[in-house]
Amino acid sequence: MKFNFLKVWLIYSIIIGAVAIIFFYLRSTGLLFTAMAGIFTGLILSFFTTLYFKFSGHTTEVNVSRNIKLDLPPSIVSQKVVSVLQEIGANVTVLNEKLGYVKADGKLSGSSWGQTIEVFLKKSDSKTHLKISSRPRLFTQMTDKGENISNVERISLFLERDIPTKQILPNLS
Image 1 (cartoon, rainbow, N blue to C red):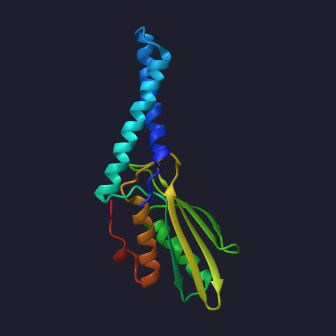
Image 2 (image 1 turned 45 degrees about the horizontal axis):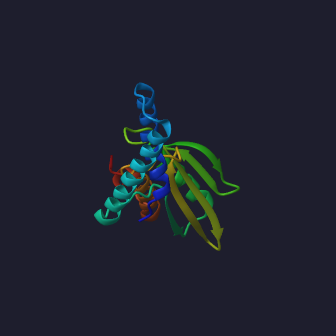
Image 3 (image 1 turned 90 degrees about the horizontal axis):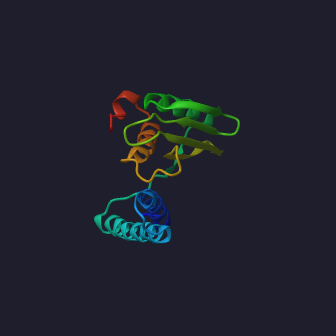
């Protein structure tokens, strides 16, 4: 469970500080006092948010990756990767079989601006090692309602079981 306190504090402080500065222009309070109030309130909110996530068991990790190994050559694995990415609604933007790299953009949803899905393929002996990763398209996104975990798990499940895609990819949204 990873939670970046500084990131949360910064976001809260900017939002609250901006609102406080607007009130500064509407009232005759001091600008320094208003900015300090925004920073202090952001600090308090960040502290309680961090405690909530630490003790509630929820995770805020949005950058998800998984390593798997398959007994297939990289050319077949890359075709399967492209197939499953299209099946989950991702748009394949880069396919470089020579370098062993596939990149796709996930679709927009009500809870995110989309995801960047990357698959790295590396051949060793008669096996193919894969690193599947999914992360938000915007680096400022702090939560994703499990979309990145779902992407990685669905791709991994399809590739490891080698059964028809329709049977293994339930709609998890």
